[in-house]
Length: 171
Image (tube, rainbow, N blue to C red; front, side, top):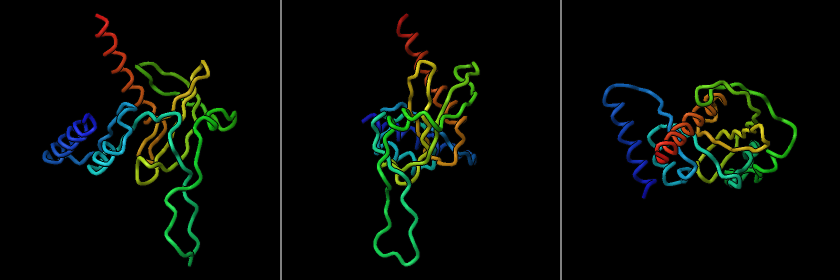
């Protein structure tokens, strides 16, 4: 499958970097179609960080509640279910950020929060970006400590490649 081929390519790349003695954290910026468990499992096993677009109806959950000392039973893996559409529609919590998008500095509004998902075993950082026309798009990063600016610039660079492919296909 395409997921398997992409995971093999990332594995080859990370292995090559390690064979050269380079110890770097690799960021893989993928299309939303690659926000799938088979691809993410293989890439995260290599120690890479993944940034990708989320579906607007993605199944996300709050962080599980803290365990109390002496609490019995298996710890919860997921918290309450979250709705990206409701978070984006809520007027409060939007912050402004200026970042480089396709070679130009742009200012947009965003919301960010930590969540858990069935896609990844662990926390992810979710970033909602609101555009001037009122539309919004969700992104996620598998590194919960990642800076919002880095996530948005990585996603913008990925989209610039898509636009280039589109322009070349027109010719």
